[in-house]
Length: 328
Image 1 (cartoon, one colour):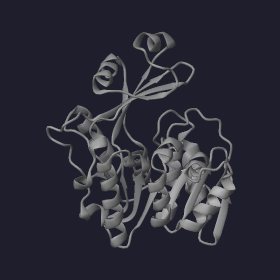
Image 2 (cartoon, rainbow, N blue to C red):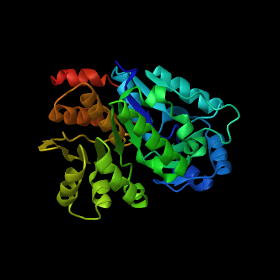
Image 3 (spheres, one colour):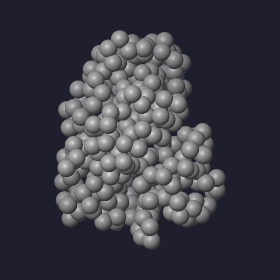
Image 4 (cartoon, rainbow, N blue to C red):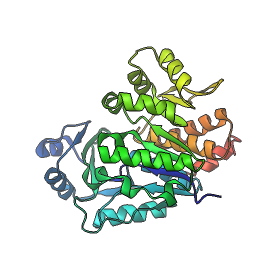
């Protein structure tokens, strides 16, 4: 038996959340309702300006792995934080969520711990200013054989391809996992990420065991507005294809098997983390040997839970929700 059922690798970013009205946003020069990357000095200024703040360990794959840890699986996360206040917070919160944060915070690291300052307006709009910091310096030296090679399933973040070091870390982790008999897969992350790395991602679709994306990402990958055509091409190349379509049916393809999973309509309070928690539910099903239909339904249940409240992590017992539908 391996040490981990699922290991994730991705950006370790602390989400820092505060309430802010339009006047404050204008005063601080924050563009409402969008995500912007900021430099270190701007990030520190915004962080210091947040008089009341709530913090959570974030990052796309980290959110997924935390959801899986809360579901009771043995999980690990490969990420990079500095040995500063936010880095210590991040490592401890991941541990409290039931996930082994395998890389100790870097003492005297070259950059501060990554953070995303999130300003929530009274109308529910979220304005995000993200300083990538040390998480974007993740490299192959951060990937231990005793972690990636001891994972039944590895889950990787497309954003890592934005830097050569991250790409090398990604490929080392995938190679170690698959050489030891594990399954490795990727979340495409967003259409702009796909645009930047289309050739690499097309290669990965054929090389990895599963690929998760939404309809916009799949259409971007195959440069077509016809989703059916994109998924047909993907299915011919990939071990397993998963396509989410917001409030429409999820499509899953594995070999000759194709299933569609209905999505029960939910009025979203905050859509942040919907894709991350869909991945958590789906991967829980994959890790526990559930049929493809059931794994897809688990993903939909986990996504519905997280969009029903603020924040990217589950607040309810998601496994109990699975039990209520007879899935576990």
